[in-house]
Image 1 (spheres, rainbow, N blue to C red):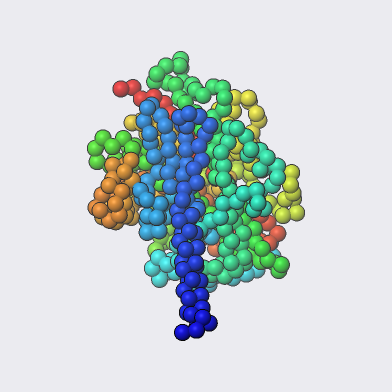
Image 2: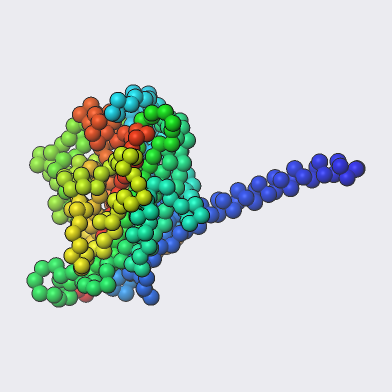
Length: 462
């Protein structure tokens, strides 16, 4: 055998080995958590983010000498490949779209979308067969800086009181039937509660029962822009599909459901759904359907037998102050749309803010943990994990599970409260939304979506 013939055989083998190693390294990177913590010897709040699906793998709360992970999910990061939609981002479009081709138009720009069925023959769910939840996001840095967040915004994030990461995903034209090449960037930030006044009095004189602690805030900001020379319009409706259980880490018996959690939604109506849970663009008033009146109500009280899988239209008048779209003509280096969003939760300096008032609150009397949400989105999907099967997937060890996939001790129905903030279901198909909050974006606009979660804790009497 000549040296030339040997090289012909060996070189392809070496190339294949190198390709396999590169692929393995990339796969390992997408499941390697990016840790955000607050500056403290014992951080009260921490988040683990996976580049795979922009997944919030863990949200750790340190309170009353206990460590809580307040989101459900698999023990191992790789488990998110099969335990889908568990704390991942959803995109290009959250929730359900009728499968098939639809004509779309915004501000005179026309187009078409072909929604691909992935949840039965009639439904395109959560962006299609391979949505943003199943894609690997790239963490940005000084060598590859964000392009959809301004220099002024990045400067504001560089604070001793803030820990953050920004990720990018590029969705090609035609991906899952959606028109236009879409550049998406997502900010995940932790904001400390401030140096002063960690305690916020509730009512009456401060005491063990009435003192509440601000532990910090989690900020999510999604930006998206079409990268097309021609005029294009496309649907964009992103959300974080995060599922909370504020008692799961107690591990003092069987995994608790969220039926005793107290939920408030600033909404007086829920979407009326048709066949296949597709929208009718009509709403059920909570005054007539009391199970949908979530006003400091225990989730289990008046709950439908199946649990909740319902969309609520929020009374969110303040959302107009932080727009869901920005004309690209006004997007310059000094524009700052996050400065009010990232103020400490106690705002001890009395800084004026036009941030929308809270639209949702979830709390547990058993742990004393309270979550408060505000957003510029106009609705929220509330889901109590009714499709969960304890025999499928894994439950985190901190929640009393084995952490082993398909071991029979995973999460069951009612084990989490998913609160997914986004625009109404298939809003672009409702003629009443034309050229308004229609969940469409054109080449002239920047998509801007935020949700903020304030974490508070009140000591529970023993």
